[in-house]
Image (cartoon, rainbow, N blue to C red; front, side, top):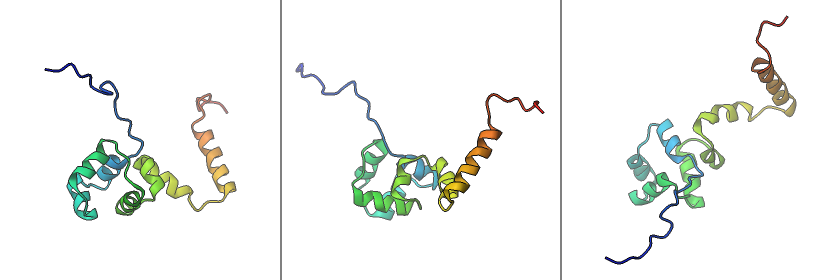
Length: 113
């Protein structure tokens, strides 16, 4: 047995995308993605393990998950909020933010008059 050290043995992969979460939200398994995109199952497995897909695959994944490429880098749970604010003016966004701040103000108990 050789004493060759394992390179990066203590590093854990860092995943910057939410592809597995998008697949789960759309009720898709890795095999479904393989079939729909016509790609190798090993490639899809690497994506699920954290590898960043190349740009052309990002476009195809976004279309498959019915989002945009930027959506792949956000949790699908955030998607409704993004869609809600998408066509709003800056004034409308500011009003909505102010209402939310009032509703969830940490300093108020709701009993003040």
